[in-house]
Length: 267
Ligand SMILES: NC(=O)c1ccc[n+]([C@@H]2O[C@H](COP(=O)([O-])OP(=O)(O)OC[C@H]3O[C@@H](n4cnc5c(N)ncnc54)[C@H](OP(=O)(O)O)[C@@H]3O)[C@@H](O)[C@H]2O)c1
Image (cartoon, rainbow, N blue to C red; front, side, top):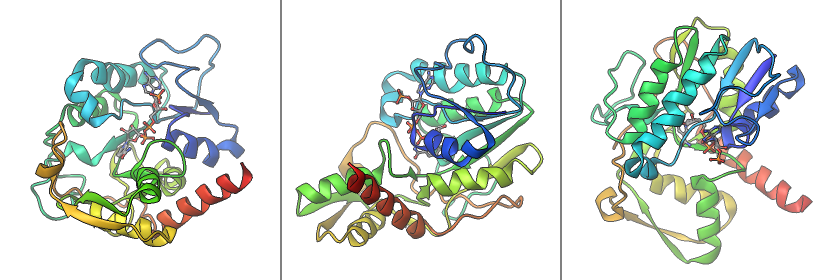
């Protein structure tokens, strides 16, 4: 049995969908708060897809212990089930100074509390784990950049977006599908992010273009935005270990916008 944690989140939902036909048990936070021991009667999973996490990057600066309780303590609780597990980690474990794609053998050096807790969580996942590092996740549900830009784009003529951070925006549906291939590989760290790269400003322009909105993007710097948590200036992830390659982020963007429209049409 596959067990998905964090099934209410954007990746957790995509994993629950991807593995539904395999009879996956998908637990949202209300079913299992991973800071606590597993719920009674859970049974023994064969594989855990651990997507539950504290993902509020700026909020973690104010409450690093709270973030660690979920990302490290929660991961230890999940690993204590004794099943092999896929732990989803982040490009924010890197400092962004390399200026070319990060591969698995590059040394992490997180600059934010969130990045530090995710790196410690990698260790807490244990030895029978696939540590799947990805970046800039988006999909049709939850809180993500695409949904935020679509909302702002409807409301405003112009949106200010950071143009000095470069990464690979990754569609959760592509990451969920690629997880199947990762599970065939030996345990270890894998970089699994979309093909192509972009700045947040490039990504916003593509979102407005694909959505048919005329909203302009005003390019600003990270310093101008002034967020509490530092972010890597460059965090494109690539694999030197044969991790699955994903489609280009623009394809994921098109699928996401189509899924949002299909959802809106059903409502
Ligand atoms: N988002 C990104 O850009 C990004 C990039 C790289 C890697 N990742 C990693 O990918 C994974 C999935 O991220 P995501 O984007 O899908 O995040 P998300 O949409 O925020 O989903 C995370 C889920 O975890 C739940 N959660 C939080 N604390 C919990 C707890 N104590 N017990 C159980 N569930 C809890 C959240 O519930 P509530 O909503 O109720 O808090 C939420 O449903 C995470 O490990 C994240 O670190 C994300």
